[in-house]
Image (cartoon, rainbow, N blue to C red; front, side, top):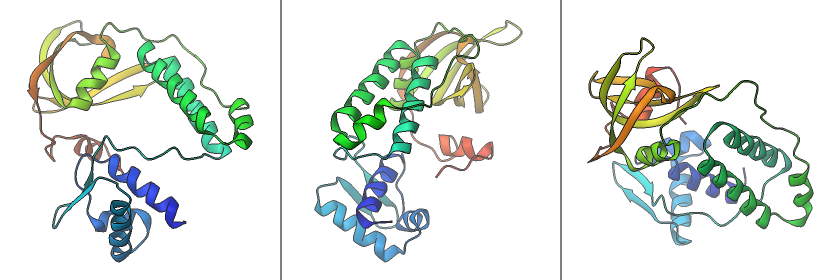
Length: 229
């Protein structure tokens, strides 16, 4: 891998992590030695990347930092096109607009030789069953997850019984055609998945939650046997 490509990937790697990442973790993820990691981090910091490092803890980066536009190859454009078509089909209007906006921004910075590839995308998602309707605000749920705000909700189970829950929302998972809200349920003191079409009411709490190692998304994914890189 070229160093320039690796620097971009390390920046994305840091932005995708909520917790600090050690040099050893970066080295293992990219197949390089820790000395190379130190040089790469120093290079990124010299170019203005807002990376902070603390001995014994690791590296973090300001999540508001974005890299300048980069180019894509034909297969990457195909993958992006597929993802955008899935967002259009299976989320809400607000998120679909964001997907369209992202595609427009990508098209605006593509070099001339790749403009044709964007127009010839041939991989799409198509509706193969009715979309399961919901009454909650899908984009609002995403904001609660991003802001790490606890939510209070009324949930109706498969037996039509309603319960009131306080949840630490962690992720939205798609199991066609159903969306699940994954979170730490304070009522059960454990991870739970909730079908969003069965959420009858939801309100954001004034209380935010910390990224506790045994209650965060990484811990949930580990509990169901999914490795998060």
